[in-house]
Length: 360
Image (tube, helix red, strand yellow):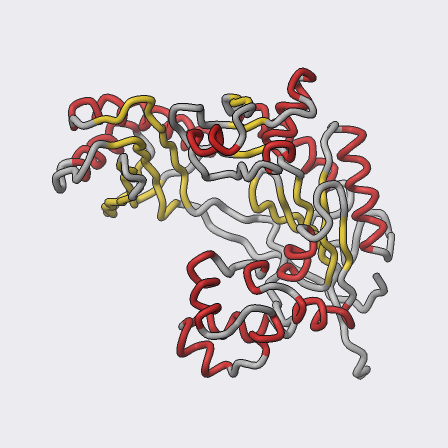
C-alpha cells in the first residue's frame, strides 16, 4: 500500500450579500446604494445588508434603528423569501451540474465535494471559477468561494477575498494559513468564545496551536478537542447532501410592543398558520413545540414542551403554545414571538464520499 496521503476536494460557495444582491438585481434603482433587507428606521432587525451599507457598519442582526444611525441614507426593503428561494434553487441546479455531493447550509451557501465530479476536471480551483462565472452570467449575482481539503478550511477561505473572489488553500499551506488567522475568524468560534480565548492569551491560530488538548478541553469542554484538531487542519466531516432540517419555525417582529397575552395569542395564531403551511409544504411533523419570546430590552426566552406523538396541525400547535404562553408571567413587553417544531419525523441519510489524491 502507498504511504501517499489522500485528500478530498471541497469547495465552499458563499453568495455575496445574497438577499440585498437579489433586491439590487431586481430593482436597478437600488444598485450602488446602501440597502438593508428587513428592519425599519423605527424597529425590526436587519436580515442582510448590501456592501454599500456595510461600509458604514451596517450588518445583519443589528436593529433597524442602529442601521439608520450608522447610515442615514440607508434604504430599508422588505424581505421576499419566496424570491430568495427561487434564486437559490437556480444556483443549486448549477451546483448539481458538477456534483451530487452538495450540502446546503442555507439559501446562500453550500459545500460541494468535487473529488470526483461530472466534468472530469481534476482542478477544484478551476471548477470553482467556472461555477462562480456561471452564477454571475446565468443568475445575475456574484459569489465567493473557498477551496481546500476539508469543509472547515474551505469555509474560512471563502470569506478571504469577498466579494466576488476565491481562495485556494493547498494541503501543504493549511497549517501556516491557520496559524496566521485571527482567532475570531475561525469558523465555530463565536463572540463569547473569542473573548474567553483572548483572556487565555489566544489571539491567533498560532497561539491556539500552543495549547494542549487537555488545556482546551478544560476551558472549552467538548469543543476544546475540536479546536485542537482544526487548528492543525484536521476536520474529517463529510459533505452530506441530504441535510435535513432539525426544526421548522415561523416568527414575527411587531411594529408595536405587545403587553397583553390576549393580543399575543392573536398573533401566535397567525404565526401557527404560517408554520402549519411550511410543515405541510415539506411533509414533516414534530414532537417538540418551542415558543420563542423576545422582550423589548432584546433579551430572549424560550419555552418548550415535547409531546408523545408527532403533530403538524395548527390547532394542536396552538394548544401547546397557549399552555407555554401562560406557563409564567411575562417579564416585560414583547417585540417578537416565534414558534418552532423540532424532534421531526425525518431521517438523515449518510453520503458516500470517495477520497483521492489530487492537485489543486
